[in-house]
Length: 325
Image (cartoon, rainbow, N blue to C red; front, side, top):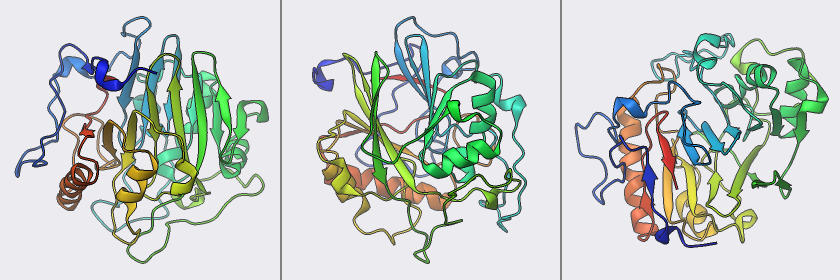
C-alpha cells in the first residue's frame, strides 16, 4: 500500500483546510475548523463517481462512500435532548427517532457498523436498517436489540472481534475494544442482552453491550480505524497500523494512558481525527458546538497527540464535510 504522504490529502474543493496547528485551538474560536457551506452534504448523492469520501455525522458517527457502496459507522442523527449537556440528565428520555433529519441524509446504506449500543450510537440504527436494507454488524447485544426492533435475523450479523469481512472493494476487520469510564470509574447503562428484550422505549433501555472497533481497508487505498469510546485493549491492535484513526475524546481521566496506549498500539497513524468532542444534542450544523469543558479537553487531546506522535497530523472534522484520505 503506498504511503499516505505520497497521496494527495484532499477535501471538497470549496472547503478550507482543517489541519490543526501545534498550538491547538485558539481561545475564543467558535469551531475547530471553518468549512464553506457548499461542503455540507445536504444532498449525499452528489459525490464524485469512484471517490472514497468520509463524512462525520457528529459523536462517533460516519458516512463512508466507496464507489457505489455506503458504510455507516454509529449513525446517530436524531441528537435528542437528554439533559446531558444542560442538566439534569434524564435516563428516562424517550427514544424519539427523528426521521425528518435522517431521511434527507440517508439515501442508501449497504453496511452499518455499530461500536456499542448506547443511545448516541445505536438508537437510529434499526430505522436506518429498515429504510435501506443495510446489514448491521455489532455485538451480540446489538443483534438481540435489532431483533427487538423487528429486524430480521438475516439482516443482522453478530461479531466479537477478530473477524475480517471481505466486501470486494473494501474489507472490515472487527477489533475487540473497551468503553471509557466516567469519573466514578463506571460505565453508563452497563450490561448486555443475551436474548431479545422488549422493544426499547427510553435511552436507559440501550445498554453499552460491550464495545468494538473497526478497521476499514479500501482496496488500493487508505486504511482507517474507527473508535466509538475512549478506552482501548491495545493488545488487540497489533498489526493493524492504519493510515488514519478516528479517535474518541476522553471525558474523564480515569482510563490510564489512553492516548499513549492507543497511538502506540496503532503504530502512530499518519492522521488522527478527534471525534465525540461535540455537543451531540444540538442540530447537526456547522460550526460544531463544543461545550467549554470539552473544548479544553479537545485542546489537551490535540496537544497530547502532537507530543506522543509528532509525525501525526491532526484533523478536527466538521459535520457532513467530505474528507478524502
